[in-house]
Image (tube, rainbow, N blue to C red; front, side, top):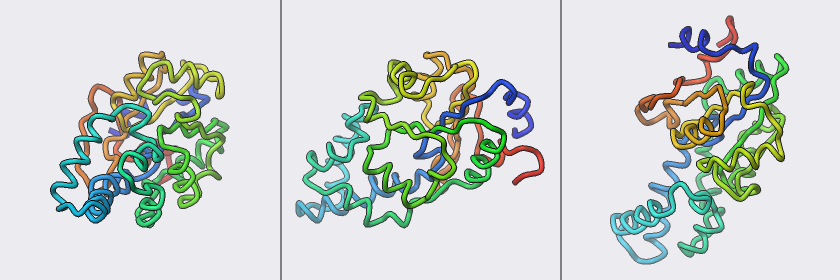
Length: 227
């Protein structure tokens, strides 16, 4: 697979890397544990519910908001659930971790002169916590938060707004994400080079490629002789 992907990507054509955060650069295990285990536990404690009932109530609320900017908004969920979501994230921040080979990849791309920009739907408070915890900022040339643009990446208009703060040539841009709906949005906008991460959560099975070129981890994108 790795050789096939290297043949598919013409690195001479790529000057900008747009990189998702959760599930792409960072292990999605933190987010999955937080929303599926930690929040239900704290919600059950706060409202005198069983863990099972808390999960049922929360998952129904999650489903209604999925794909919207509010789904990613810490302030929205704090108000909606009556919990301090930022504080709850800090309780389990030790689970935040960088995916294997990400730092090697970012360093190599920087050495080759490509611009590396984080493009995330994560709320500003979550973004700040994760960048502080991982120290990835030193390997990035820019960070764009969807909340600052007012639209999630799932909406094709997002990419037009991105152009206003981070001008880019879609034909010379590689975008890496773990979400097929986000990748479809980028494809609709006209971004030429797309890659899906198949193992966003290192403790869960790999996903299907879903019609996109894909990698399991960033070792597959390292220049020869690295990783």
